Amino acid sequence: MTQNSATKQRHAKFTSSAGIVSVAVMGSRMMGLVREMVLAALFEAGTALDAFYAAFFIPNLFRDLFGEGILSKAFITIFTETEIREGEATSWRLANITFSTLVVALGILTLLGIFAAPLIVDVVFHGDGFQNVPLPSESSFGMSSKRDLTVHLTRIMFPFILLVSLAALAMGVLNSKGRFFIPASASTFFNLGSVLVGVAGYYIAPRWGQHPVVGMAIGVLVGGMLQFLIQIPSLRRVGFHYRPALNFRDPGLVRIMHLIGPMILGAAAVQINVLINKSFASYGEGWIAWLQQSFRLIHLPIGMFGVAISTVTLPVLSRATAHQDMKEYREAIAHAFRLMVLLTVPASVGLIVLREPIIRLIYERGMFDPNSTRQVANALLYYALGLCSFSAVKIATDGFYALKDTRTPVIVSFIAICMNLLLNYLFIVRLHWDHRSLALATSCSLTVNSMTLLWLLRRRVDGIGGRSILIVLGKVLLASGMMGYVAWWCSTRIAVQWGTTGVLVRLSQVGVSITVGVFVLTVAYHFLRISEFWELVQMIRQPNDKDEA
Image (cartoon, rainbow, N blue to C red; front, side, top):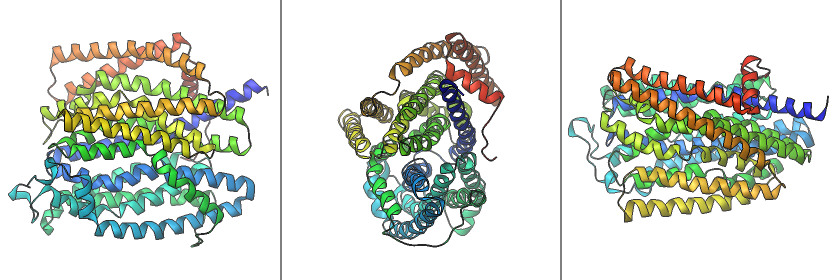
């Protein structure tokens, strides 16, 4: 086999694995949208819905960090290195020690969080649009304000931190063994459990003297448990059998802890920026819900493309650096960025031109009215501008982690976080702009973050295929512009002819516009001869990934 053929084979396998993860994550994100649709229909933005999103934000922050970031990435890096250098028995012992340590540490954290819930809520959500908003007397269930309801919900959902962290560690084990589908689809079971139990709880909770939104909070806990349990059979198939073991001085565990500390800022720029946004969003009524609902739509392409590519990239880069094969490292990171550009740029353009029709189709029913559609669409516009940067940060950060460099992402992320904080203060406190400016600040800071990381990584490894990335980017921008114009034209024509009322009309407006847009994009990719596109086509026609189903 020639060297060029070997490279193509590695790229094809990489693309296939990323595709497997993308499909699994898409299922999870779609179920997440169903959960958001249910919440939007049952609860009005400004009171109970704001309280639920605010309460869920704290444990969900850990979900985003651990489920798509810190814990999994740190564990994969050290677990893979341990297996290569010290053998499988030592790596399984490290997994047992890590699981046991996690239960003890996060069990204590959960108890502290339940006790300190009032303080946490008051520190994070201190704005007048949150603290001083009373609940309607007919639906207060003994609580006088949005703040009191948020504290109650926070205490109920705090154990979710432990459940989702166990699920993330299980994902790290399986990803290290080349298993991607089951861990990527595990969060589908979280969303499924939270929706089914949450809807049942909505009707049952008032009978027990609880606010209906408490049922949704209990659904979160059940969903978190399912997300972990669904991975246990796969863990056993790859050879992992849990044996309680505690050794806080274990060298592997110490190295994982050393990575986790700096990674909190390095890998969590998106989540910390969202935390800042949530805090400033408490200045206005309904802002928390509108930002959450718009960011949920951004989550779909981030998960399908950014997280999927990142999930597959880190084990490849970790093995390349363990074998000191920097040529393979540079090829893998360049291919990951080209694939990311190919997928995220058209997704960003599509969300921008079809934002109102998409939101109207997904959300506008029950308590979600046309004004809410406009408000969420306004935020989605500015989030979508930073979609490519959201994904690029994940991949670039993984590139540094594989090199055992956690300091550089920390420094860059700290600068980006400070920039986001300053922009939020300027937009909200000084200029008195609305919630749209919070989404804009996030996209601006993440763009600076991603571009800086790319520049530094290029210098660190003597090139990351920047020329090939820019060529693909130029072609994709051209193709996406054509797609966006055609999709916008179709959407506008349908709205003029048929209006925007009714599920079938809305479904036709979005479905036809997306279908025609994707067709134009596919034709453009064909004539522009983008090789990564043909790898995706080949993967769809002849899937060669051996991952479990």
